[in-house]
Image (cartoon, rainbow, N blue to C red; front, top):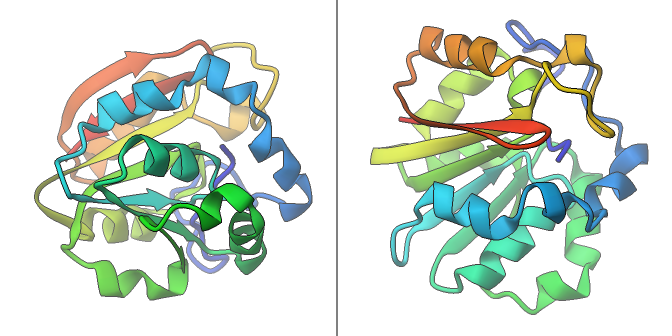
Length: 199
């Protein structure tokens, strides 16, 4: 998903030079995405604790946040994005209104979640995150919390996502996260993406 969490004045370390264009937001709601990255698999990799709190970091139009909220009604899903127009699209979805455990939040409120999050999902945003955003993300976690990064794979031909030179290979993604102080505990390849779970 082209979710995003980048402030224009903090792109140091980000591979993609510009943020996602909301004019392309309809692509985020394409149900074909679930064929290559099923929400059930995302939930399994997240390993959400009972009654926990998940932050969908750069939720975009909330496509995966909605599915995760359906799958885990016991978990509070904080759907965060920096662009208000993306959250407006999320709130306008009838499915979102039926999920009391789904909470859309602007990225400007991120400080209120420091050390309160059990799991973070960073879906298709690693290539957009500057160093400071990654530090902020790390600071959100409770002790023992983890982040699941899923991003486009620069090494495969893809029908969607940014150009190859705007994203990382799995090895480059791992190296970037390790340099930022994350400890890798799981890696997995999908058809067009790779996943890295870290703490």
